[in-house]
Length: 86
Image 1: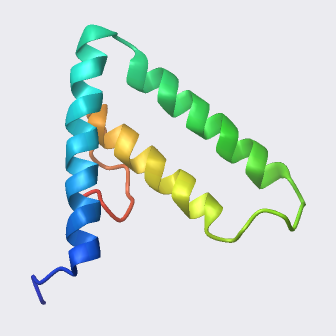
Image 2: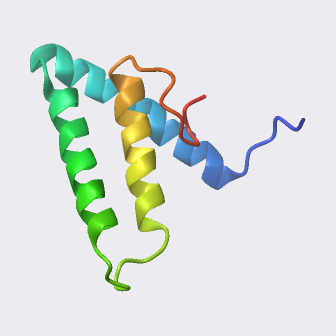
């Protein structure tokens, strides 16, 4: 198993790490913030998935799933899945 990352992957992991820490800090100042963000993303994802429109690009649901994974990890739900959950 290779431990090398592409520069793009390293940047993505770094952004995920920084974002998670910022979210935890903000949630400490504004309790419930992450839960509210999770509910909003879940609602948006449900709305997108309920649309039968072909106007939604294929990667969009995966973006929402990754956003949920980052938010859940920041909220302490480690078993949230997602590419950057490690």
